[in-house]
Image (cartoon, rainbow, N blue to C red; front, side):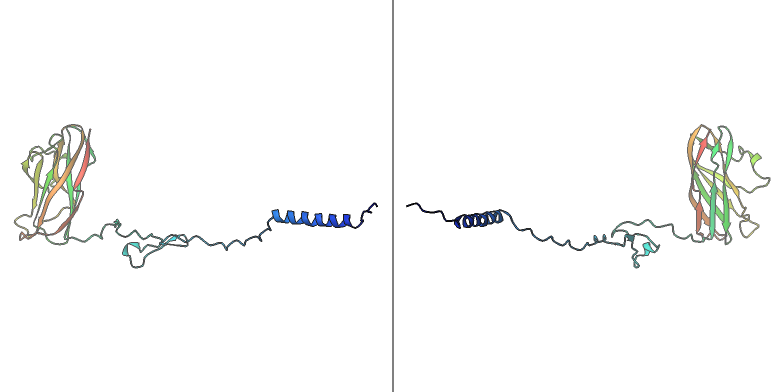
Length: 225
């Protein structure tokens, strides 16, 4: 006896195979995760001591009063400007020419300003004796000086140093100060650069009491040709 095939088996088998195929595919595929939200953008913290990209000023720091000045690190050495000039009773300005010729003479001069009576001024001048010679009273060339111009008297100390003295006359109570006076006259001996230094300045009144002073031009270089 021959068994008839059942017509409903084929659709059932196809459905089972389809379900198994879907389950197999679903097993090998992971579900996609939802995209993460990016965190809100944060500005990078400003470096310490800065605000908004501009240098800050420490109101308690006396060296940073200028607007926009960066406060120096703790312990840093701050370069300060020169202190305000003080008005001294006597002010001296020394003047040396920038150049001279071998064999010629030139004067080192000084301008003097005083707010009280002066009796005596003493100055020492140091120089290189291989480049310069301090001329004595008999050797001075007076052609470049005004007639009757008051000048310092010279006392040689050693080779390369002289003392210059300007004192009041006995008949007057105080020294009559010229606007500019010749300090010492040098003769250029050999070519090259050399330095003239003003040292050991002393100023006193008519009674011999020392007076305070300020000076400029105490060290000068001169070119000898």
